[in-house]
Image (cartoon, rainbow, N blue to C red; front, side, top):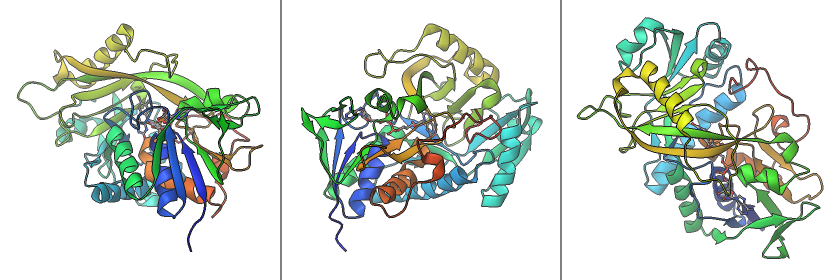
Length: 380
Ligand SMILES: Cc1cc2nc3c(=O)[nH]c(=O)nc-3n(C[C@H](O)[C@H](O)[C@H](O)COP(=O)(O)OP(=O)(O)OC[C@H]3O[C@@H](n4cnc5c(N)ncnc54)[C@H](O)[C@@H]3O)c2cc1C
């Protein structure tokens, strides 16, 4: 049956682009609006790439979602003819005395059927000689993990959405004191309005969203691979998560250099800040790399990004209706892990938006509480 829903999606990051695409695939008439060009550098869904890995501690929900999302990324890649996914695996380094998340993950992997291997600390360099791991307890290796090309993924989804008849428009939506949405001085009207404005949701919805959304800035650094040596390329090296050191990274891909982040939460003004990395962050990240990837000593920084992560208290996403505007659905809540779920998230939000089913309890605005690192899907 023809779906006659008129939908507007505000925000063309991964959450909005994938939702718009899935609404369009279900037959809705959809306009996707963004302040800037989809894939722009202020959004969270940008940079070259994002890690996709199923590891989520004891949380089976996200583990299953990532398995589903991985297949959908591969399908989107085939549908768009663009390289969106590199399956170079993910290595999770478990730190002595802080392995609850990694321990719990093994049980979840077994239940859900996620392929993985466990390596003793001393065996990691036999598999991946780039890493120095004498300080860790053990490592988990997830082979069906890797990286999704982030900016390209958004742009590919938006391109497909347009090819399927979706409309893309440039504009900045605003809200008034009752949190009613406007565009160009006029109230936004549609059967369904999906708000997927990422970290900007906080300032747009001071009553409804701000109390459950924090915002932090994070820097990542790209370091050149050694001259004449391809061992730090994605063809030879996995992505890695190093919770004990508050760090993660991705091997070099398409000439990017090795990307590494040491999580040092900073303030960020998403709209107005210059996106430059601080010297203190640079030193901390380089010092981390010297210890963990000694083969990169002496290599030069070739790129860097400074971006915002919005975080809910329990690190669960937000997919819920506005309490006072019955056609307004929020879709976001980043919490540092939304990108990888993009296509699955968009499919889920489209179904909620078209009232095919209700949202999941974990995604509701009400009842948020901080989880311990043991319970949290992100281990933070
Ligand atoms: C440094 C860093 C590393 C990360 N690493 C990973 C990772 O490895 N794996 C992973 O899965 N996730 C990762 N994440 C998280 C992931 O990138 C985010 O959760 C995800 O991209 C959030 O997408 P979004 O669409 O909700 O928000 P955004 O991408 O920020 O999109 C919001 C969009 O809304 C638009 N907008 C805002 N206000 C308005 C308005 N008023 N009117 C119109 N448009 C508006 C913006 O222009 C923007 O395009 C990382 C994030 C960062 C910052």
